[in-house]
Image (cartoon, rainbow, N blue to C red):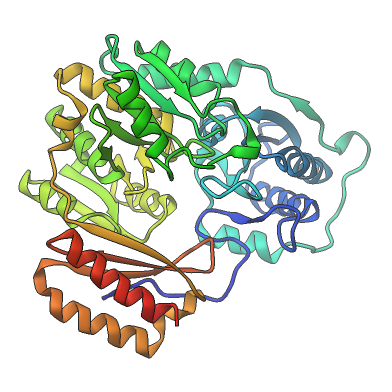
Length: 451
């Protein structure tokens, strides 16, 4: 059995702070304090040679976004940091602003794939990288600490960014396209989120015929029966419109999952396998290695190994994938959930970059998405989210039940229990030779965990 260790509760989870907006945890006061602490902790490492420090803030479409954006802007400005408000933009635009746009800090106000009442705060540091654990811990320890407050002209200025930054980001996406899409018909589901306006524009610029759904930017309905966590709407639309493929993003557009022309789902493992093969064929996959997570399907691992490629597996979370990529000098990694990281072009998971890469692979090979996805055969995998304390995964009765199921599966399957990094859930994942067997094992274990 693989069990992710639990740790003492922290404000920052797998991907920043995420909670009910304006509830007990994620308040405007917290957003202000996080921004002030981030400015203090990160900019203390800055040599100051570049003049005044700059932070950028982007958000998704949730109604609570402007409230938290304003509070965070006040926090940065009160620490003497200038602020540019990017408005509603995908998370990767904020990373791009730190990597290539001159910003020292980036803050995203988004709860990603969570439902509308939630929101979140995630930070990018210089170079466009997510913060390592040690800096997050220092930032969290500094919350509420009395600090020197600049006055007069030393107070940060708050302004609205112009269109140049987003235009630069889009230019980078199109530059990563090996071949124009050549009229491929695409349905894009923007999840009523941050990519509602930008995704259709990008895919049209890439040469595709685009039908956009869940793209009104209605934050009241973000991730509600649409997007990367709910693919039925996209599957039906692809078939209805006779499209070649569908692409689904989540609320902040750092994910992308796909649907082939028949409406069959192509998950993040299959996308990662397709792109790994493409890069390997171009001799552009360093060390013949791709980075996945402990949730990567066993079929993905076997397919990569059959082509002579190495798979490095990390804890779940694109930040851990990124850390392994940077440490090993690798340029491709991702998660089954649709986070795909292409370090030659971006510093974080980027759903639009992934979508453009899928289009380019289809165009350069002349193959359908279904044909490309056959690079791997998925072992039947069942995931059950059980509402329970995260520590429940370590309890003796749970571990005993898992050991029994593992003996029954033998070498033909596996069990993974993983406490959620953002919610009071234990995720029970089972792979087995048949869907029925995987489902039965998962249900038995979910019942034990949920007691």
